[in-house]
Length: 300
Image 1 (cartoon, rainbow, N blue to C red):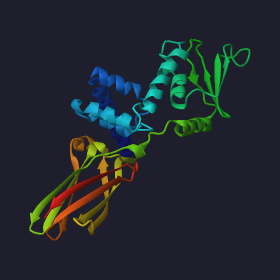
Image 2 (spheres, rainbow, N blue to C red; image 1 turned 90 degrees about the horizontal axis):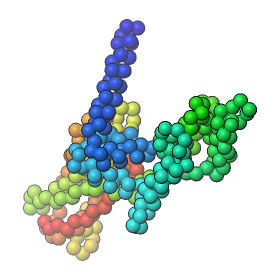
Image 3 (cartoon, rainbow, N blue to C red; image 1 turned 30 degrees about the vertical axis):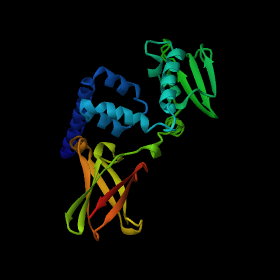
Image 4 (cartoon, rainbow, N blue to C red; image 1 turned 120 degrees about the horizontal axis):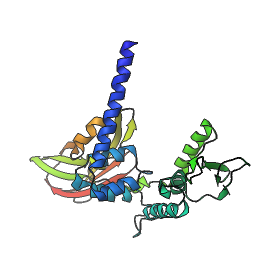
């Protein structure tokens, strides 16, 4: 029992350390980055949050660009419809929910409005549902009710789940109705170099920036699989070489900061007759199904 108590104590100390570190990183953000970080609190993932806070200040603007690009439902239009709708809902929440001392978008009603959009029906009971009740609202998304109650009668309405099961249903509804991030439109880059090492041999260098790799969280690890396909064609457009392989990437969460400015390197030797060639390389991230394709011409 004593050993268990010590383990629990160490675990809670670790949680406190992580929390303090995170708060310290947030405190050191520039005003622009702090505003972005605050505004996206409802849609930023745990992994994105960790990456953003640990990036060098000069790289955060590129993160922000990529953050919204990943959520653009139609990258071929000038406007990012998801971003425009998200900020429009923040403004609408501030206009609709003016009661209380907290800005509307930071209230429970604002959070639900931003994530799920306006309810199909909004029943308002300023004097309570019953004679002795508190001010109350019930929002309906289809047949799904979401109640809010102003217990202090100060205009600060709180989400009031009907039961533990209702909490789970609300969370599930938020995930289902929350705008999709459009991860299939994500383009993560790779660097492709062909180095001639001998008369008929070359080395293919592929570098993938870690900051562009989307990982899945598994316990205390971050994991993903990269599927690489390489094809080489001769000058007559005949396929002369094919390579396919899956690469499993696994990182401890505490090691993420160390690799942020680095690349995941893949090196592949190839033997060919002398001549002119065209190489195409396609890399797919199995976690979010994003992919990138590069082509390069070279001579041996």
